[in-house]
Image (cartoon, rainbow, N blue to C red; front, top):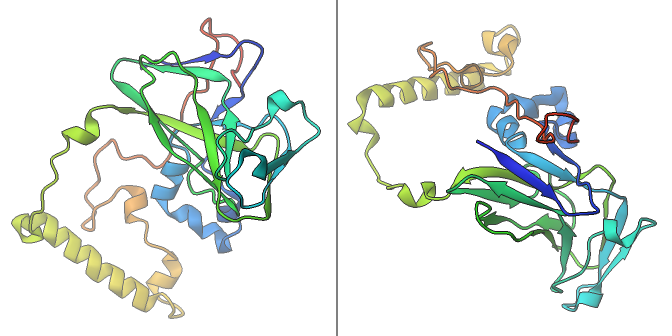
Length: 250
């Protein structure tokens, strides 16, 4: 599948495969947050566009465009703007992204990366046909609070998805007992989890020695059966490169 980036003339947006690291996860005791495989996969499940310059922004709480003030020594073309009012800060992505037929782009902020006072808005865009650029918007959540973005900090995150997938889903509710084998696996996990939590504080226990349960991370069912081969513990996304294969694209 091809994902094409057309930079807007005069700009060179910096786009990279998203890393799984987060500063707040690094700061957890023994970096325990990285034991959560779903967090790790989500963090790295796309590409990031990075800020081209340092700046700070302040919203006074009013609904006008003038209510946001942006301060930076950088050229205005490298900075976000107050375009909509209503406490919304607008970043220009400065490229057109194109996908193959039937493929949309999910666009938002970097997952699991909270930022005090401001929140990334999310969009789903039909990038397989539209010759339109898009903006990345962040909404202030607290008036009279100054937020800062550093050069190289991600402000936009995107990944492709099939346009018709979500509408093709047929949600149903089925009793767990209708699948005895699956129910037995869940019961075994539930009992094992309860025992592990009970034993974890006890010195010398096997749970204390193990530290945390790794079955999902390792792709194992409670009885030791391996998960499907498609199980992922990490992602390795390709960087954007020029069509002739030269350069890093970052």
